[in-house]
Amino acid sequence: GLADVANGGSQLSEAKAKGQRVGQETREHARGMGKQVHLVFRGSRVAGGGRRLPLLSAASRTAAASRRGSRARVPGGGFRALNDAFPFSVGSPHLAHLARPSRDVVVKSRVSEEESSLPTEGEGGVRVLVVGGGGREHALVWGLARSRRCGRVYCAPGNAGIALEPNTVLLGKSDLDCDDHEAVVQFCEREGVSLVVIGPEAELVAGLADALRSRGIRAFGPSRAAAQLEGSKTFMKDVCRKYGIPTASYEAFDEAEAALSYVRRLETSFPIVVKADGLAAGKGVVIAQDLPDAEAAVESMLLGKQFGDAGASVVIEDFLAGEEASFFVIVDANGTSVKLHSAQDHKAAYDGDVGPNTGGMGAYSPAPVVTERVEAEVMSRVVEPLVRGLREEGCPFQGVIFAGLMIDGSDVKVLEFNVRFGDPECEVLLYRMRSDLLDLVLAACDGALDDFGEIEWDEDPALVVVMAARGYPGSYEKGTLIDLPTAVSSDDDPAKVFHANTKSGEGGEVLAAGGRVLAVAAKGGSVGEAQRRAYEAVDAVDWPEGFCRRDIGWRAVEREERKGNLGGL
Image 1 (cartoon, helix red, strand yellow):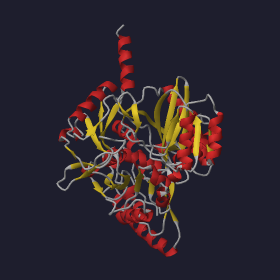
Image 2 (cartoon, helix red, strand yellow):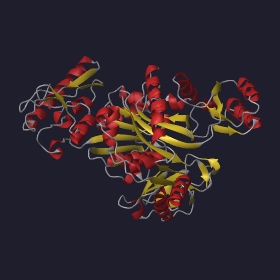
Image 3 (cartoon, one colour):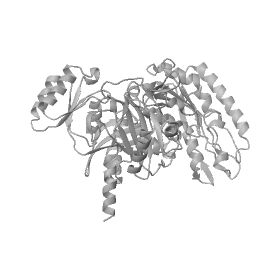
Image 4 (cartoon, rainbow, N blue to C red):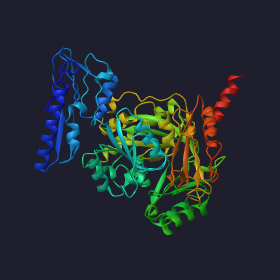
């Protein structure tokens, strides 16, 4: 079923009708076979100067072609078509979606980009489901909904702030339980959702992406096997060791006696780090300053079952000194990796980096400590061997790799890998991103990052301040009232309020529903200016039961001040 379209699309209506017939026939035939099928779309030779049109089954390549006019010259003055094949389950409505040229074809002739760019996922645009309900997911929904090709964004379970984003529908747990993977698949098939963006690591480790892909639905995020990069500290360290990725020396144990014997032999090697092997909500790491600390950590994890199954085994590793930073990379289905950007967060609860560890009290991007030299080293010595190694291990990665780094002068080592965007790092990254997020995510899912082009960023740094409930990360009160001035959360203002743990009251008021509740982001010509704007927005929020750190970005601000002082000499 090839659609021939001549000279600027004069036969588009005929091609559309033909594509619809092909789609319907293919669906009916597939149901009858009871087998998995592949739809293949290829470019066809057309009249008018020997042009050959790129008939793209990947929506992302459609966007890339319309954006950049991406065509390859071939002998005779024509153009080479880009051809892809994608598997879909029998009876899936996505067969029809991809069989309609009006939705998947970009005609490149002597017409403007506006005239030649056509919808790619139905007349209403692409329908997306975002899984999660925190500040990270609010930033993802915000970025996706701003795309020119987005039709509707569903978010499960979402929060009060996400509900206010345009073209967005909130799905509570009673509407869609994302722990039930079959229910998620059926929802996508019923509602015509062709892309699912999975925010939390727990859903990735549980295999939600696998369930979706097995039914022909795009999933942004790694498979269950590849998600072990975050789900198991032992797996992550073993991969680093095998493929030469720089990280701290370590040993892994699942028996307390052997682990205690090991730490007692270390003698003067303290401090050391004891980590629960599995997911422990960011709380499974202990920096042991001496032997009694190390023994207590091992016993609480392996004998006391402090973290349940997540602490059934432990990793004991050398302590790394230096400055921490995060580096993010997007990887497509073919293993192509493209760098996003750096960020630096603040884990301690209180000013001066003191107090208990949290999920993150603020962040800024870019991180000045991640220089161009550091970026190049991370890509060549960390990302490339990691992506290649996972493929060799039989678990190719697709999604976002979040590399936690320790940087000490010229020495760069990996502290950890996460398999999703961080929170609150996601908020500052997407607040700076100028490229179309939906196009980028589709390109990653469809193995088309090579055709995407450079990711564009706002040159101004961004900074986010997390507002948390008083008492966090300990016990805190829920259900307290938050008064958000309308101007603070307007996209036209120099600040954006992302909701992390909020819910709507009976009268539509915003109520706190967790520990980290709001993430207030701002941009500026410097980190110092972004910091000032963010705190001006924070101070406009009326929430007596909340608190925040007042020094987010202090390292970068100090660097800027030192640079300014030197410049004035």
